[in-house]
Image 1 (cartoon, rainbow, N blue to C red):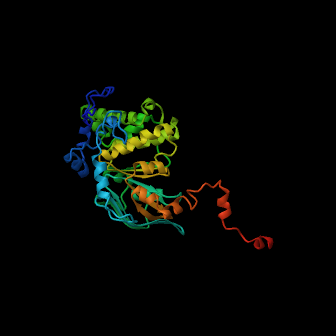
Image 2: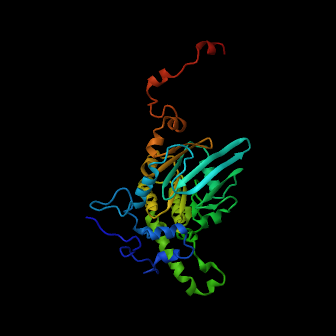
Image 3: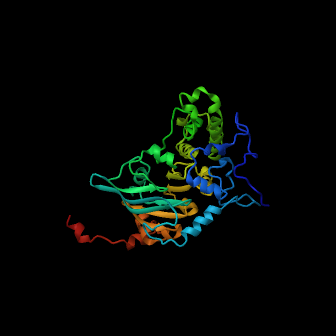
Length: 367
């Protein structure tokens, strides 16, 4: 049987300590982005009820239907006619980069001519180690400065913009090497990511009535996210006691406290327990249905095939291919550059060795 579902409802969830009846969405009224208003006008609540997103996945519970695939269907339709080639323009890009280069001595780490990310899509950035993917992330988010080029996010130029300003504009990221506050609890790490915290002001802190409701809303949202990422039982533990995979989950959950328009995930699956991977995949898929654009770096090709709407391939700092996942990942040139020419061959087969070119015996005899 199918059921109706209100993304903003908390009626079917257990009450939060000290936050019963807290309405989380009001927190987003202040400083609401243009993209958020557009989603609301289309009947979609951005950042609503992360605790209610367990069904927003590719596999619905038995006898039930998916809550929504509206944005997934829209993105698929928008990208269907787009040509599969490097630097191709997108119908509705949220991030555009032109001529971005970064050199370290005599090595060019990034040399991107033109790159666009489709709004509301899940885009995978893949490539071998050393291709420049993380450096490109650093440049786009203000953690590093390019030697040349320009880029803009939702129409706002970002060259020379600080990382904290980039985050306030709605573009947040996670790191390949996690950045958590080891001596703070998991819950306190989450609360650091909340965008509206008037109680932190010296004067406002003296008037609890002016900040208490925000504090309750922030805590309710953090609780919902910790449950969504299966970290609820760890909420009072020090973040430094978490495993590497749990830190990845914490960092992603903390990033979502800001209700970002674009979230950039640097190898989100690295070190995550296989038992938690499906939950993380579902969480990423649910972000799209809330109107969040996702760009992620990943070496797990099964994950890329499963959730990506669009795939971009980097090699030696350049974008060498773009397109639909199946088209790009079946491209012989991409397979050769990323996986090697023997990617689909059993190297334990002696016939492979027999086909390999042999050095002339005379050349060895002369040494």
